[in-house]
Length: 188
Image (cartoon, rainbow, N blue to C red; front, side, top):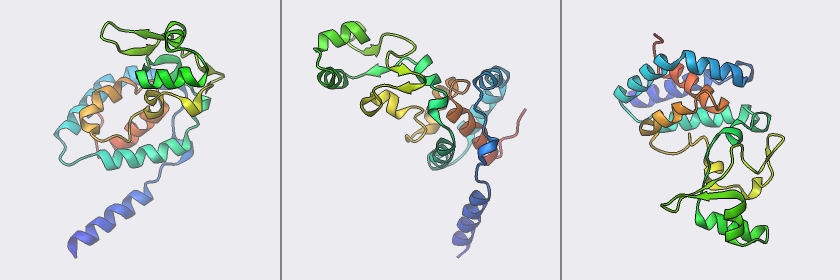
């Protein structure tokens, strides 16, 4: 009985703490400035999370879902302007077939291949970005579909990589800031 009431209190507390649309920061210049200002704070937060007991995946996924609903990625497009995107050979073949080109043509026009065979889009910003929108959205690559990777398991093990994008992605920035509040992290 006691466990159930504690769980209910936690759920009620979360419902009261819904993220308000106007409270989100989406200005990229502010994100970049705060990213520089918050380096030490974010490092302390990373250590705080490392020492915290219990998984964070469900809370991070919940925050990601809340924040993602409130942010229009097409008004930003910064990931497409600043990330190196990995492409699997299968994805490259599917893309080549979709636009009626050979894999060799796709590699020559859009991809680079490392000595180890890893394919990446060969330009930053991405070839397929036009007016902050992906021109191949329905067929975009898995690396694009999955970004910012906040719904994947193992958040605690990926926090370093996530914080690398803190000043780049409004979703990550706002999820991290809300996570600081919901975990009762004390700012330095």
